[in-house]
Length: 309
Image 1 (spheres, helix red, strand yellow):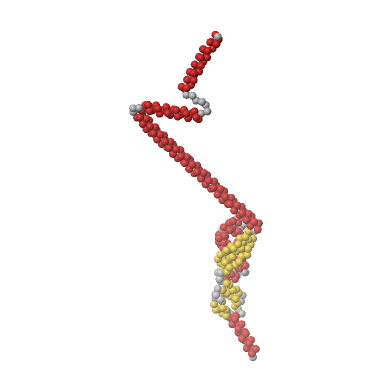
Image 2: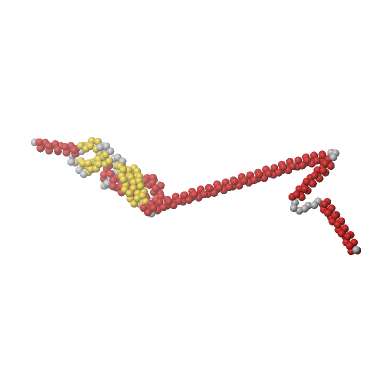
């Protein structure tokens, strides 16, 4: 009797398990009756006909993130790069996701890889780095159009890494080094140019300052000489006027002559003292000629006398 009761309870439990269906939140279930689609059940408590109804597919209605493995792509300028990314999708129609394609996840990944290769092939290598946002948008548009019969919605695609081959990396590094060396040479050339300009400007300003100083010096010297000449002329005029006034007074002419004789004698004595050649005044030279003439006459007179005796 206990065996039959146990068997009955087991059968009832199986029937209840097949009869009651609880679908959790963020999920949907596709129900088939006798192998034919019956309904798509939303989250909650549902009752099925045991042994007639069954859950054929369960789908996650939340946004799903698919990791797209890296694949080799050839860019427009024939450079091989490896591109990987992330694809975000969401099921919008559980019926199409169940019967529209065998496995929508595998199909979405393969379609993403194919679309990435196609879109990267339209861009140059430099454009794949600088226009990554546009590349993402284009990939999303292409995948979303192709995946519409599958009942899924492609929300976004994010390129994670774009990795060129080792040869390309070495070439890019050499190009970057050459570009850095070029910029360094340009910077040094500009610095040398600026230095030369600054030096020439300094030398030019120095020459201008020197010329201005020399000009001002000559002006000051000329003004000084003019001032000196003016002062000397004024002093000479004053002195001459004083001398003239003194000469016009009684005894002034004699005093003037005496002063001139004193100056003459002083000057003559100075000449005798400093000169190596004997200098004889004109009057003394005439007296010497006089005495020489007398000696010659005396000699002439004495000569005939001797001849007579």
